[in-house]
Length: 115
Length: 114
Image (cartoon, rainbow over all chains, first blue to last red; front, side, top):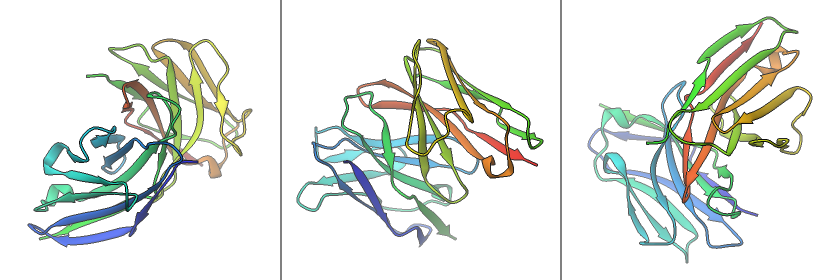
């Protein structure tokens, strides 16, 4: 069965500092992995996704993630945090039942950005 | 891009009443809709999957008779919380696959049962 684990429920960085949000996956098939951002009382917005093409995936708002099969990881990074990046971040994996399968979400990581 | 419109954004209802949440695909046909529930500061938990014209598939532990899902057309899926109780208070989000591992999410509905 597919699953994802996000290490660290809360991450705090200073504005301008590197953002690193960790995600490890478990999958019995080649995984399709996603990072989403959620602002309070809103739906989810896709930051980026890995679908077995390039292992380094660039997303919106300066975020990127690298798929590392040997480490079963898909960590999200951004070189310089902005105040507007403060939000909840979710890593997700597709359940493997095709390109319309359900998503399985990690526990989420709250990113706090300090001025 | 593909948009799912979810209504209402928030609703307060009395205990014992029913509440309907609608998700409409505005510019594409959604043959499948996923319904999630999210408690404060927690992740999204899949409740059920609806497919147009057929019965919804519920995840283990989700009460089918309490959370009625209807997907009568390719552009509308609804979730009805029947005989709502305070423990049903939560944030409900719908999501539709848009092809090649694309998913679009509704903006969510904050349900408060008093």
